[in-house]
Image 1 (cartoon, helix red, strand yellow):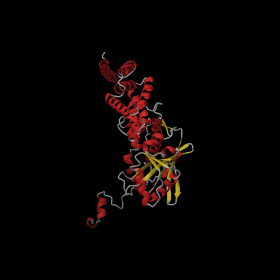
Image 2 (cartoon, helix red, strand yellow; image 1 turned 180 degrees about the horizontal axis):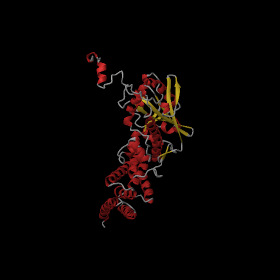
Image 3 (cartoon, helix red, strand yellow; image 1 turned 90 degrees about the horizontal axis):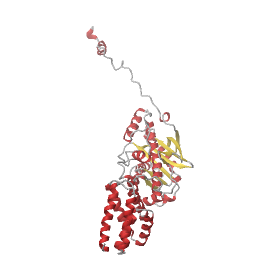
Image 4 (cartoon, one colour; image 1 turned 60 degrees about the horizontal axis):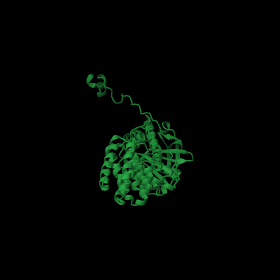
Length: 409
């Protein structure tokens, strides 16, 4: 009788459940994006796209910085070699950041979430366009294009190398006109490198937030390298809950760009009002102004940097840059006028430059000695770090010895 048992019966006698008897595993619960993130579905000529929106007042503080600078972008426009940047109101600027399926670029990489923001009346409006499925990409691109339509300039962080080319590829692929074609494009990453390369170990946006703007993100933040995988998991399971952190990350990136631009512009337009608090930042500004041919301002910035507690290596670099800059000025009459004005304000470098001028250009040893002695008095009454004081004392002593020899003293 036992020989006539089926294989299934024999397995049952051994306590093994057959496939038919196994319970069906529960299907993962589906959490739609609109149940996780507050937003609406926007209808476009190419279908629907999910849009989340946040508004910040123009006076909102992002860490220590506002989102809006009170100065025109004149120096930044000169640095970017785009005069139109200075003439456009900030309401014509769009701030843009993408979250993508990868970092390789090319036609296989797409942006599943695009955050864009602009100033509308008295508010900074952040809109995030999200595609629930890759098939919704044309709708995302159309919705974004409509939001960017009133603008004339684009602000990104590494966007010239990544975000803008990536989106341009997607617009071309779907035969949709590129909405920012012909816009001015201000990429903040190269400027951040110019300003903080020597002082900060990283120029990543999140690092600048913490160490320049004084802003720390909340526990909602997710690391950027995880974001593509979180989206792929969402496509597989339909569970949008982990994407809440992705939306937060993207919105903070967009807001951070506005705050960083405002902070940079305040530094460049009015570096002496307290925004710049590090000697190396003054030196970096001096180098930038020197490259722009604004030598008088560069000299003041180098000098201010020298008044801070720079380490010996940085101090030597700043002194050398200032010396080269003064020689490059060429117009000695104007240079003397500026040095005398600076000396009246107690700026040490000006005493040294005047001593050099009278010794080497005017051959007036008496005047050269006068300015050298005045420089020594300035060092003695100044509150300089010991190594800075030693540097100037050694230079002045050497100059004094040479001038005394020339004067027959």
